[in-house]
Image (cartoon, rainbow, N blue to C red; front, top):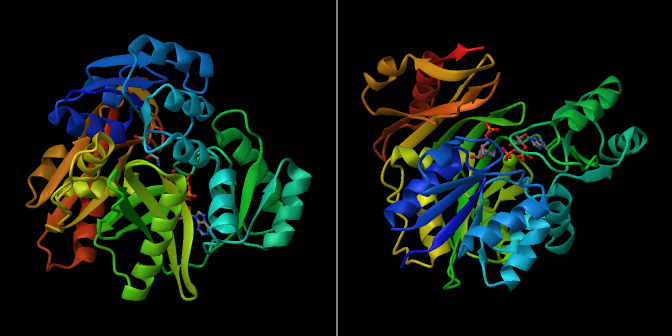
Length: 391
Ligand SMILES: Nc1ncnc2c1ncn2[C@@H]1O[C@H](COP(=O)(O)OP(=O)(O)OP(=O)(O)O)[C@@H](O)[C@H]1O
Ligand SMILES: NCC(=O)N[C@@H]1O[C@H](COP(=O)([O-])[O-])[C@@H](O)[C@H]1O
Ligand SMILES: [Mg+2]
């Protein structure tokens, strides 16, 4: 049966979700703060609004009367979602999940205090003086992040006293929305980090994908690979934590649950109640269903018979290094000339330094070395350059 789905946020993750949902016969209205966002290019309809403006959200919800609202970014006036749920609209995965995860404070307190999950030691700060006290409490090095931000925006590491003021300023410039408060987290000396894609369903049955390993720079995603090396004990710990936190947040859909694997055990870091950027590796055919196809099925209440591991794969990001519009790409032919390699260019109309514009995907059989697949993805991504036509 066809549903009207309103997608709030229309980046690269939304684009793949739109394609997956349309293949299941759905109608999508793609919303973002700028026109011609990646998902809008493939959706049935589009809206351009400030999603932090509750009145604007109300207006387009009343206009389109969607059956389902699928948030694709964090920075949305998610408080409105509770009302939409009352009106009978399905909010994905739930109003509570979207509302809690838009704010690092809500989700961190839920995970650490209410559910008792192991997290880095943390404090909040509303101004520079409070940040100084917070740093004293959690110790150095520590990581400072705005309460509302993603992809590492406004995030920095404090290593000495002199960094504290810089970290405060950086967070204020990088934040999304009007919240000035920040979180200071003790730096976890992890050996590796993973995303555990977790699918919750109306049936109540929770499914897990094989863990995805990833590497981040300046708080932003660079490479990911699947499967990640992990001990059976750590995997069980991570799955238990993912089940607990997704159950507490309620609803159906895919979640990217992030963990640090350290000598002392597994730390819960945060989670996305939606497809995860590191999960773009599933576009390399690592599973029978990509994270976007899984999300589409789960939110539509359609069955997922099984999730199978089909091959090993990796993804590496293509970043712009200049600002300008009408970007074109060089080096694509060199990537495609390689066996077991593919590319996804997102179609973002504007390039900015460090903006993610595409990914290179590499893969090989399930018995092959994932490290070399990952290295191949990283090397091939370096060959692709973003050239802007208009500056
Ligand atoms: N307490 C910590 N200790 C060590 N490293 C950390 C810590 N917090 C964050 N990081 C590093 O920074 C990365 C990004 O952090 P986090 O996921 O909290 O930011 P984000 O802005 O929400 O990113 P995204 O939206 O892409 O998930 C982590 O994946 C990890 O590599
Ligand atoms: N870590 C979250 C994440 O990767 N989100 C993805 O990035 C887009 C924003 O990109 P932009 O900042 O280049 O517009 C979002 O719309 C989403 O697809
Ligand atoms: Mg993260």
